[in-house]
Image (cartoon, rainbow, N blue to C red; front, side, top):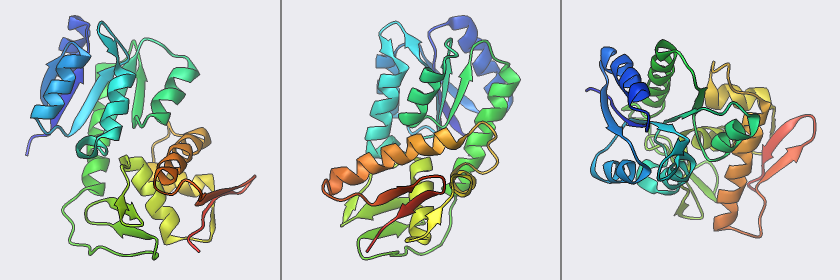
Length: 233
C-alpha cells in the first residue's frame, strides 16, 4: 500500500521540491499551506508520516506537533520537522514535543527523502502486522506489544513511537539501570542524529505522562553517570 505523507510548508517552491522528491520514491503527498488546513487534513485522512515546517503564516508547526502528540489517533505518527532555524533550542524543543527527526533549511531533497523512508521503515517495523500477544509486564503496567500501547493502572498512555519504545524497554528490564546508550539503541536504532540529550528529553516527557495518571509517584529514577531505572514495586 502506498504510504501517505502530509506536507505542511508555506513556501510553494520548497513544497514542490519536497513533493517531487517523495513522489518520485512512490509516496503519496498531500500539501497544506497553513496549520489550519493541515489540522483538517489530519481529521479527514489517515497519514503515515507528517513533514512540517516550524514558521507558518497562521501559527507554528510546533503547535500542530503538540496537538498531534496529544491526540490518541495521531500520537504515534512519525514526524519530520523542517525549519530555517539551526539553533539548538529549536531542535531540542521539537524533540521534547515528540518530533522523530529534524532538518534545517536549506536541505538536500534526496536527504529528506532518505530520512522520510527511514522513518517509514522504522514505523513499519515497530507497527508491523505482528501476531505477538499482549503481555503484562507488571501489575501496574500493561504492554500491548501488538498494538504498541502501554497502560498504567488501566489507563492508556498517549505515547509517541519513541516514548513507547523507551518505556517498553524499561518495562522489560524493570528494576535494572539502563544506560543512555542502551536506551538510544532500543528506541532509535542506528539513527546517528540522536544523542544522550535526546534520551533525556524523551524521559522528561515520559515522566510527565506517567504523572498525569499518578501524580504522587515517580516511576523513572535517574542514576547519575549511569542511566535510568523503572521502579514497578
